[in-house]
Length: 185
Image (cartoon, rainbow, N blue to C red; front, side):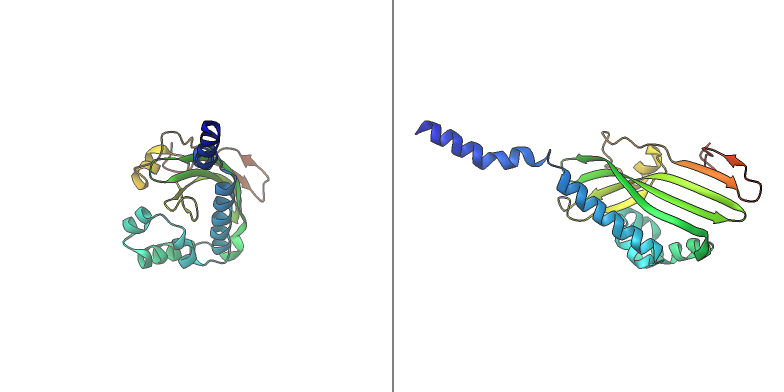
């Protein structure tokens, strides 16, 4: 009878003990949210992009409508034809904290503007406050200090790879690999 009680307790507790380490469903949810965000970006659906923005980013912008207007203003300077590729890469890391799930996902973009081809790979930081069901993301360009300004509860366990940006002059064919974005020297 005692064995039956121990086995019963194990069966009841087992799923809870292993749930934190079972990240494939979480990674699938991250990928779905990130892909939906990428679809909104490609469609230039800035209200859709705001849906995937963390509350702290929305608050710092002055609210959802202000963030939409800011995004429209910035992206309005880039012709639709300039963005050649925009995609989400692999989920690099997933961490469960006491209050949320956090992750790092690769973002890939290729643009051709002003006679230059710019290829970027940037880590997005993701957060879910509803046990991994939905996610918000922001791009800190791989800079932890920048990330902490927008996301003070960023897990110390998250490893943020640096952004990589390659710039190639289209007409001359010369390439400048790993150019550091302005202001990040």
